[in-house]
Length: 251
Image (cartoon, rainbow, N blue to C red):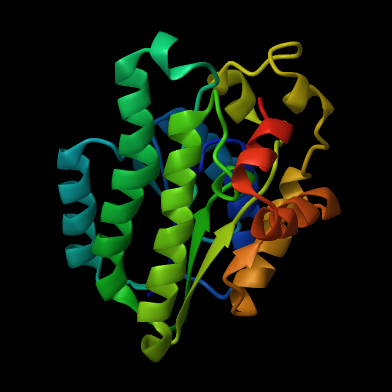
C-alpha cells in the first residue's frame, strides 16, 4: 500500500500539501495534527484519495509509540513523508515564556527527527522526505532566536540525511518560504505593527509553495525557496557577513 504521511495537516501549508497529494499515485494519505475536527473537514472537502485521520500531538512521546505501532501493523510503502508541523513566536528571549520556547524545540526539532527516524524503514526507492523549513534557516533572526535556530537544525538535518539516503534513492528536500498569510503569523504573535520587517516583506503564495515545493522534491532538489525576493536573500546569505544581514533583516 503506497501512502503519504503529512504532519501539520490541519491548516495553512498543510492543507495545500494535502491537496497536491491528491494527484499522486497513492493508495492512502495519512494526515496528522492535534485538531481531529479540522482533519475530518480536510478529508471531506479535498480527499479524493482514501484518507486516514491520525489525530495526535506529535510532541508527546506516547504518540510516537502509537505511530510506530501503526506503521508496524499496516506495513505501508511510504512514498512521501512531509514534516510540516511547526511553530514559532516573536519577542526577545529574556521576556519569553520558557515553556513555549521549549515547545518550539520539541515540535520543530525533536518531533521531526523522531517521526523521520520511525518512518524511514518503511520508505523505498523513489520516495521523498519534505521538511518545511524557512528563510530563517539562512541567517539567525533576533527576536525569533529559538525559531530560527530550530530551522537551522532542519536545514542541516535535511542536507545530511539527503547525503545518507542517496544510495537508497530517497530524496530529502527543505522547503524554505518567507512569510505566508496562514495561522502561523497569528500563533507567532506577528500582527500588523508588531514588526516593521514582517510588515514590509512580500508574502509567499501558500498554494504555489506547496505545489512547486513538491515538484522540486521530485526533481531531486535539496532546497526550494519560493519568490524571487527570498531566492536573492538566500544567495546574499552565502556571500555577505552574517552579522550585517542580521542587522538588515532584524524583526
